[in-house]
Length: 380
Image (cartoon, rainbow, N blue to C red; front, side, top):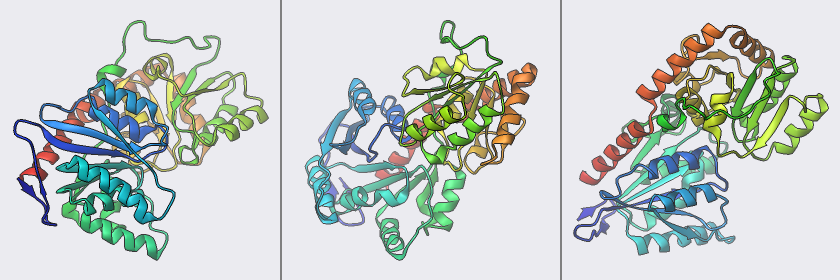
């Protein structure tokens, strides 16, 4: 029987796996939800009895369908429109019924974890884990107070990059002993070059640039459209959806680029699109460790990305891609032009990116490290 610091025991049926509740708190399917799915598809369900908990009104169909296909039970909880206490109690009731040994919350920013994390603490879950995918400074005293509480009740933070870990400790006051760095991982075999995977692109163009991202200001996609204006004859494909779609579409139309810049919406054939492009570009303004870049690395594509924390931990300038300053579409266009005009350089950068992805950013390695952390927590 495992007893946590709050003195609550978690019972486990003889012969059953250790119960683990994953909490997906996002409203739409994005990079965080994809990483959860990648983990759930690979976790040993003989060792871990996994339940995926989510808000009932969240639009995360691909995650739920994928989890169920992997044999993972899903559990919806209502998102109360009342007080914070009511929202917490909805999750507390569900957790008391499930009696997990570990509660693992995945949310984009640590500040967004507070409702499910506090619920796990009130429910007496022995081990509480939170993955921090991004960092955002605390903006007021109320947030700082909540963060101090979270730092007490969370047993372990997982940071997806060293940069995120440093911010958790330095800016959010998380004790260093509570932070473990586990880089995001992708199914490298899924993105490796496979005969027949390519999709049709405009072969009359001077090259095809592809990106896969949520259409959100964070991703800097307006800069990519500006770069397209500076590269006549080059085709740009943007896969993904989000709140910026209408604004981006208007920008593309306004610049007269509709024939060359295509907003593809959500796509399930990203591996094939990667194999079809000449360059992958992601001009994000800030990131934790972007899955889209790791996927492009696994596909051995030449990459242009912004020189920001998190990205630098995957892309070494001139070795596994080219880095440019964020918010500078002229530099972005110049780097894309360099890769399109220098096939030997593109092949070398793509090959080295693929080798690094297999070595450091595989889904297998990510899941192994995560399960090792679970074992450490349950044996403590």
